[in-house]
Image 1 (cartoon, rainbow, N blue to C red):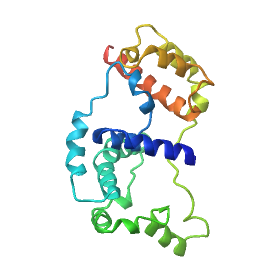
Image 2 (cartoon, rainbow, N blue to C red):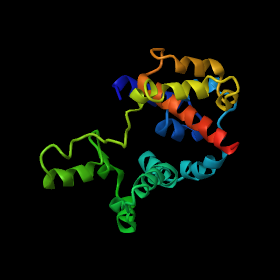
Image 3 (tube, rainbow, N blue to C red):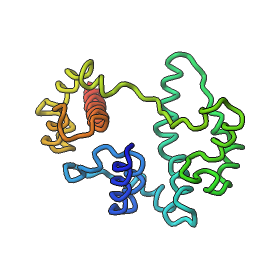
Image 4 (tube, helix red, strand yellow):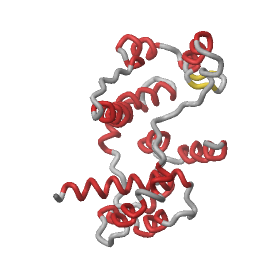
Length: 213
């Protein structure tokens, strides 16, 4: 993420209501186009989790980490890993999520986690002393797929068939003009954000059609 994009998202978060801030900090798909939603997102369910944390006597980092632990981690990340590994008969383990380690890190001060502009500060310091040079300074990498390429190649026809249909379910949720703009490569959207947005819309459309079978 460039410094410009980082600052843009940060200042954008300051203008949001408390129940939208966490979502803007974690998932930015179409957040800049909330006025293009025919059906506004329903934050009620997640707000029941978020509101008590907002009022808790914790610093901002601890609040974000806690919310990740009760929403993003079990609902998305761990579920994805379980599906991916079990489909190949693999039994995966997440050693950093052991009860003992979680209890210990929850009691740690935030300055041990983020310090001098470095994330995972204590972990990186331990790695720096015990692992080969350069390992501790590597950036975080997720389980990324070549989505930008797929959206314009192997998934292109499928995306256009599903999302261009006049009766597409997603057109009842998001304005058709925005969907049509996303379908055109080279428009005003960031390529990565465009690809992820199209894939998200496609996933909703495929899910909806599967319910009618």
